[in-house]
Image 1 (cartoon, rainbow, N blue to C red):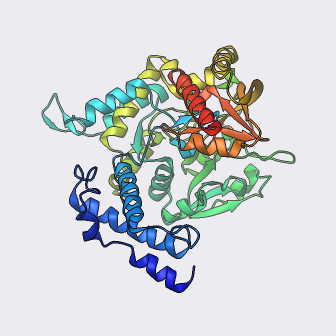
Image 2 (image 1 turned 180 degrees about the vertical axis):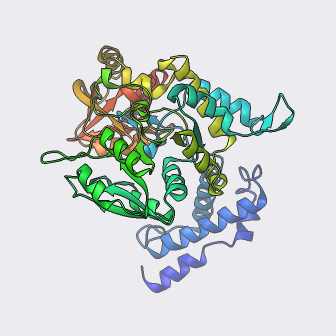
Length: 473
């Protein structure tokens, strides 16, 4: 576009006051606050100015009139205003087969947990109020009682597991050393590294051994007058195989007793229900570590536990008490909604209502149930402009838990007709309402119903029918 034509097109852009003064534009705006409407009009005018300068709007081939500009402004502003009414954090259908999908919020909460959150957060609650004595109480008691029953030791709750290990080392090894194997210095995602979190707590990490081999002699040789704790980190998101060695837990327990220093184990994933009958052979159970003599165990609430985001610190009473009294505990403590959800989740464990907890239900789900639902979904998709069939596949635990372990599943596989692509269909499903997240491999969409709630099967079918039929129009 030549400069004269560009200047002319830019002059056609109305001012904010001109837009507000047009009666034909006002309908649809009146239900929104004036300040918000003005802000969105400014944004749209700025967008259109950029579009004109880039030749996207008002090119020499296809010039745009002032009337058309006004209508385009109205259309875009209405879209933006409608978006302001949509929540930023939205419900998503997870058809990826990744049970603890970190980017999708990890563990979905149980109905009991959701009901408890609604009841507690919709009004006042006894978060720190003793209803019997009528005095101030402690929030720890709400989840602490159930945790002690389930784990057999005292426990406290902070806002996530990184905070749990940070606070633990800040109290037990601040100004001293925490001895840890080089093969356990993990990165937990998004660039956050366990060593960085630990050292921020004021502990000096004393690395021993090598990446693939660390012995109890390495730990013993590193002990000195500055040793504040022995540290063991569960390698929950990777495996080291081949020529490897790692001290047995009972060896570390024995050494910690000899040197009179606490043994801290970061289990990360937080498995308190034995998953070995369901194919997970190498995931440590929290109670096993505690019974073996570990002084403090830390783990997440929103991974294999199946509860809300939380960090749980459990272990011997004298160490838990010290950590609880650390001034930083208040800065890292959990809120009433976390306690409400965690309390409800732990009650489900205590009452052995395994299938009430979505994560456990998904992991325990039989291949026969998945096959039956997959057949039903495929039948609903018959007649669409796409190839639909069923194939065997693997579901993933996700969430940095049980690396290299999978669960057998049946996938609904869908290949769009010629002229369309799986990537395009995947994007359309992400932009659907509600958004649907699927896998895409070898030019095909893969739908794993293990992570789809039963009531969502029809929503997936209806969305696919609508999207695929729209593409053929």
